[in-house]
Image (cartoon, rainbow, N blue to C red; front, top):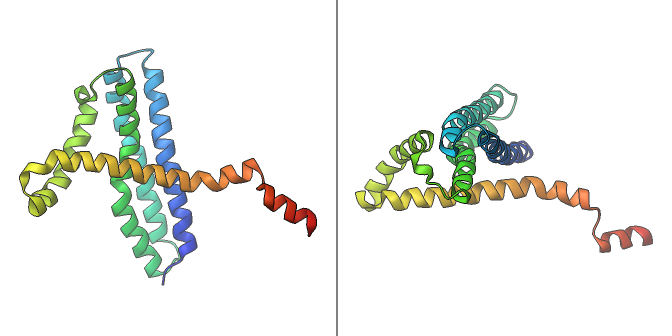
Length: 181
């Protein structure tokens, strides 16, 4: 068996890490624009952000593996970490892509972005070539971007929604039922 509550808490931390990776990288690149071009800023900030997110995920997995959780919980978390690492690492890259887009610049000139794209393509290409032939790598990259953005968005909303509901207060029907009871 596995501890669903523990996995839910870890997924909440994943959502927070995704959001922080996106927001902090975006903010750092925007601050970097005062000193350098967007491509230079992205090349300086992206490797740091990617390294910190990978380190955070690694520490999370290691802390779970040495915890007193059940074997099923540990294996489930390890599987989730493997499945969700690329969408997590996409968070800071997508911030750089968004900023470059709004500045009408091509992010492809960034060596950090290009390195990330090449690394992901090296992971995606064997599966794509085996399943569909070698001509669909660009389509696989586009699908990766979309799926990773959706996973990050869902993880973020799932993490923030309960907090927003508490912040906004009870629903009108809930308040009325509390007054009656």
